[in-house]
Length: 399
Image 1 (cartoon, helix red, strand yellow):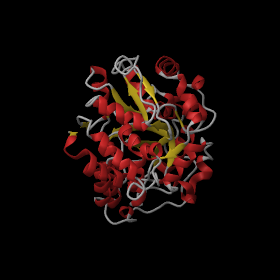
Image 2: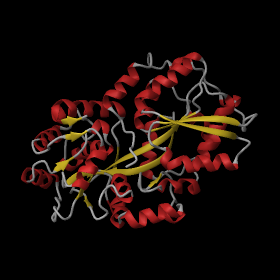
Image 3: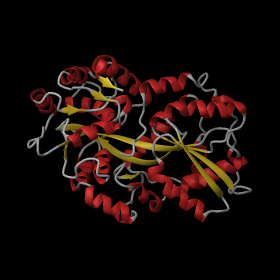
Image 4: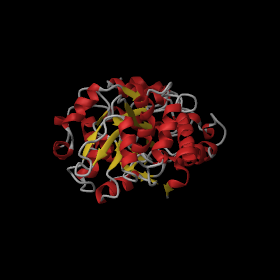
């Protein structure tokens, strides 16, 4: 599985603490919109850093823009890093007055750390240049997490879902209580990865308060009493918690476990890659609420006027339905598009083939059927991850 970069609890804390005082922005100075030309004076070299695995969904969009807009961008360089590394890299360049990173592709983790440190250009100041994205309703709610300092590029409802081997689990659980009973009757055969390191793990964690009817699903400290009790009891029958989602997939494939937590993308993509048996099944639990996820483009403060001009044109291009269709990819972030009016029939032929072969018809029904909730904001995620590490994971997390 092409690993996704997800929010790491300790990493977020380190990222914030390593980047100087809040609202410092590394001393970067803002350009005013009137100082940013409609087109660069000369074609720019755009250095893009990806800390979310986003290029798997968007590189085709970017490459086509470069090919068709040679007077805007002459060359793109791509680098990848982890979300925890991002704020320090940006802050160092801003402090030196030499901002070389022209565009950042990030999840909610890097987005929020940069907002907290005032590292990003206020993209809302350029809405007239970017245009009004016709976001899907749940995607529009995820856009609000950017607080005006980033633009959502891709979206998916994520999970939580349960994936299982139908040969060993002929009757899968239908409720959270049945899942717990199944795990008790089949010790060491259910597994999910450490939430701080895993998309399916964190989605399972954030989805449980809805499944269990907890008092406040948005407050992991005071509102998750049922969730923490449930996870502690479930943990008695979990052998260990992998540090990566891919290990749970391998364990499902080799029979070490029979059931795991998953999401739409982590179900489709590993089966398409042959890493999980194509015949494995998924189900949802009664009381299902989708926990949504998204990835964003952010622009570091301190970029040149020409680079900012190119960024704005590129982002506008990436939000068109024709380009959004490429986000179907190989089911990695299924569905993927963040805007309305984008159908699978508009996607590249390979994407259509993968989704038709390895996708599930029930997904579109479930996406329409069940309520959708935004992911916890980054600081609340940190709180939840920290408590899980202390009270649930303990010494059972494999590095």
